Length: 225
Image (tube, rainbow, N blue to C red; front, side):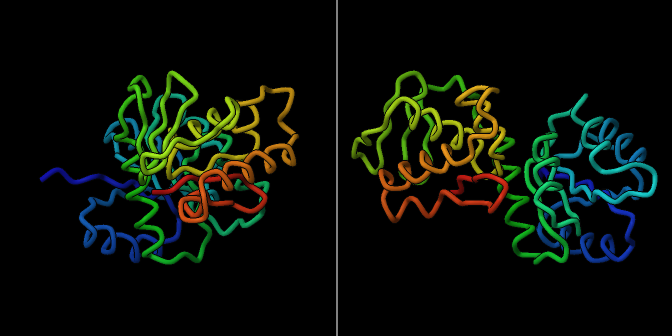
């Protein structure tokens, strides 16, 4: 049986004592690093399937670890941190983190986020003709989508927004990431404009499905299964 390896990067021994048995019980193989340099060496040599990264490390800031990690690996990264400021979350996500969980965290939620990130890692390449998620089918080559077989009347911009979220399901996309991808770098501050489009999408998707489109207050949006 293939077991996903989870590299836990944290200088607090109690975090490792808590997470190691919990990850093992959930069917994962935990790896341990307490410093940034060690984390980067293990990421390069052991090729973990996912990294849980604390930002407050003794030898370097977690943002620097993330930046260096992204120089050679696209492994999913979930940031674990007591830093609860929106700016910290946005900086980590813009730097390439896949998710952000505040300390103290619930084990059930963290394991769910890990499973989602691992599923996203195994997603088919974007070259497939259609993406499917919870009854939603989105054409990638043409601006068409259906929900439970019923056509959605989406504009090209709404379709592009929905497709971007679906391609990154389970991940938090920041306002800046979405605005840059859909409207271009000149519109990175047009958050109010983005909220209008998200509201339109939710209305067209209907009450039931729109619950899958989550708002991360002050940060961005996430599409979940």
